[in-house]
Image (tube, rainbow, N blue to C red):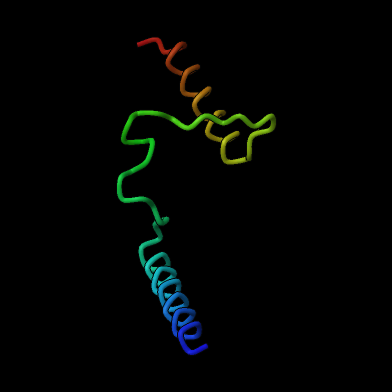
Length: 73
């Protein structure tokens, strides 16, 4: 039983330290290799109804494309 308690305390301490690091840096935890971004593969959103953040990003991209098309200079 003492091994279980010790393991639980170590795990709890680990999560506590990770949360302090997140609060200080304001940066999300990410993998060391960078994931799909390193390979140049963009994640696909297969949702029928995208989240609000994705909708804002899509609207901003559409606005930029319209500005580029209608640019005089």
